[in-house]
Structure formats: C-alpha cells, structure tokens
Amino acid sequence: MTYARQDFSDNHKSLPRMPSWVTSARSDVPEDVAFLSGAALSHLHLVLSHEGVPQTLLRARLAMRAAETCVTHQGRPERASELRDAAAFLQPGDSPGPAGEVYLSWQRAVERPASITALHRALPEIDMDQIASWLDAGQGAPVARTASVLKAVLADRPRDPASALILADAALAQTLGWSHVHPLLALGLKRDDLRKSGDDLRLACYRAILAAATEATREVTDLARRTTRLKEVAPKLRAKGADEAVALFLSRDAVAPAAMASLRSDRAARRFCDRLVELGAVRELTGRDTFRLYGI
Image (cartoon, rainbow, N blue to C red; front, side):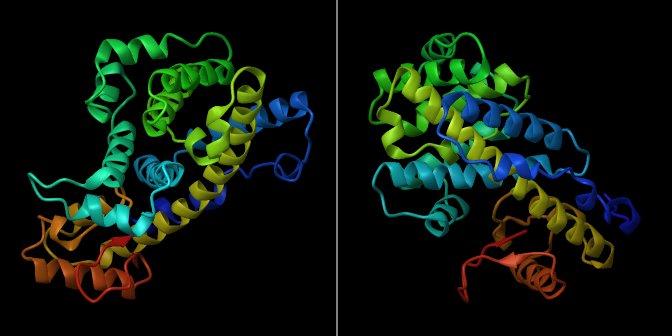
C-alpha cells in the first residue's frame, strides 16, 4: 500500500458543501422541517458517494458519537474518553461494562454491510427473527419507516434505547439503499424524543436527521482533510510495517500502539505514533503519559 501526494491532496477540497439555506433555515412548521430534512439527507447521500470520503473512518467516528449519546440517554457518566478506553484496552474474557457494551454494539453495527446477520452480531442478545420482525414493522418513506421501527423496538425494550437507535438507523440505511449503517438518529434525537409517538415522533426524527446530516457532512470534510494529511506523510515513514499501521488510522476512531502488530514492538509502535503526531498527521487523544490512544 503506497500513498502518493498527488493522488490525495485535493480530495477534501472537492467535497460539495451543504447549502446555506439548509443550515440556516429555522422553522417549526412540520412540512418545512420535513423538506429541510430531506434536503440535508439528499446532500449527505451525495457527499457519501464522493471518492474522497474515508467511509470506514467516518462510520467509526459517528459510531463513537452515537454511543456517547446513547450512554447519556441512559443517565451514565461515561463520555468518549472512557468509551475509547473500554474498547481499546479490552482483553479476552474482560467485561467492557454497560457503557462499553453500548460502544461495542455501535462499532459492530457499522463495520459490516447492514444485514440481519450483521445486526445480530452487533446485538447478540436479540434473536435474529426478532430483529427481522422489528425491521419489517416500518413501511413507506424513509423517515416514516425509521420512526416506526424505533417505536416498535422501544415498545418491547423500553430500557434499551441503544438497540432501538441502532435498528432504526439500520432501517434508514436500508430504505436509502446505503450498504452500511450510518448513525444519524442517535446523534440528533433527544432523550425526551424517545417517549414520543405518531406525528410527534416523526417530526422529532425529521429534526434529528436534519441536525445529524449537517453534522455528519461537517465531519466528512474534517476527516477527509485529516486523511489527506496522513496520506501525504505516509511515504516519509520508513518503518517496516508502516503501511499496515497507517491503515489502522483510516479505519478506527482511536488506535492503541499495542494494536499495531505490523511494527516490531510496542516501543517501535509508540515511536511511530509520536512521529505521526510530530508530522501533524494524527492526534494523541488521552493527554496521558501511558496507555495512550491516537486518532486522525
């Protein structure tokens, strides 16, 4: 895997921007909110089809934010730093804890193409037939179907908003023809929204998608720029196994040096990460002297 500067230097600059009339509009009229939501979703669909988008990394970053929101809905104190630690330093046989389980579920939900089997892998405590039944609960337009699936899951599992939001976002992805789940509802719905039903729930979903699609578009632009920088400096990295290590940063929200098996040792991996920080290609995410994590 070799990265040439000329192949990537302008990718992030060519991404289309969300129209200002979408981001600046303010309305409480349901028809207006639905229209703006559709416009934002359509624009996001266009952006996601662009060759310069780091698709896997984007889904990983959105999964982190979705997990953090779900944990907050549950009234738990953990935030991104704790969730990253729970996943990055998990050893075989260890329990990630309730918040860590939520994060791992979101990670698994976005890793593979959306299917009943993939969703069961993300939510192993839920029977595959039950997952299929919930996804069949929604019919019609994307947001109407998504709201129906969300309500159906919450009716059966009122204390499990994470599973409901994962399956609702899966229904949205399937309706839009997306191959993978992209967390959107989980980013935009408030805790009180999960108690709504009917027209009120659909309106809340429209608002959530409008906000989340706008946020996701900004995230795409930022990640594309950061990815470009990493690919620019990659040819300067002479360490054996550097290409494989760089690839980890293009697929994960956070990377522990110990995960870089392609490098010779933990010490070599730490030096490699510190070199990337010096080059402005990645960031150290924890602020700690030990057990550090790095990400684009």
